[in-house]
Figure 1: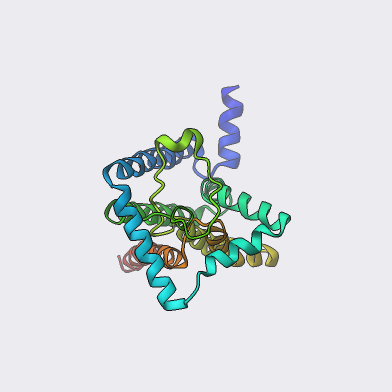
Figure 2: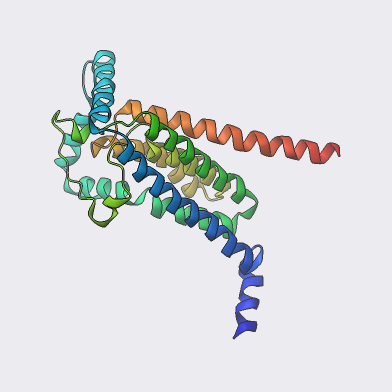
Length: 244
């Protein structure tokens, strides 16, 4: 039995079972610590400050755009059952399910792109965590401005932070996933899907009342910052290796 498992590892895993175990430890270890830190940030911050920041974002948007496009999106979605289902599914799965599966797929099938992909996601989430600590922000659905709040945190409420709207890590992670998967996928339809993925997720988080477009813009900036740091470091190492 042990020989069969070892053979499967050599045949299907880029660097064997030990490296897969190490990567899973890194990923799930970070996820657990991140959720605990995010929950701690919730306990350290005051709801009044989070709501104050949320209303500040609301004020900026209404002065810039003279309307809440996010509320229009939600009303549009609520009138179409199929779209409402797709939006709900995307919101609850775009982070852990989609991000986790795409990282696993890249690890197994496009391993040369894995480390930079993983590090970009981890760095973006770490930057976002600092935002949640120093600028707790209530999401649109909690501000009492017309959004329908259909969230039920359930058992994740112990480690969840309801005041983590700025920046939107849904927006950040969707952009990183979209860019990387567009780059590594070979079929045109896969490239088209992943090219559209970030915009779809941005629409979803606004239509569900979880983020303002300013939150999404902040998330996009976080993703670009994380990717620039990770990929610039990769380029510098490649150049140094060639010159050595």
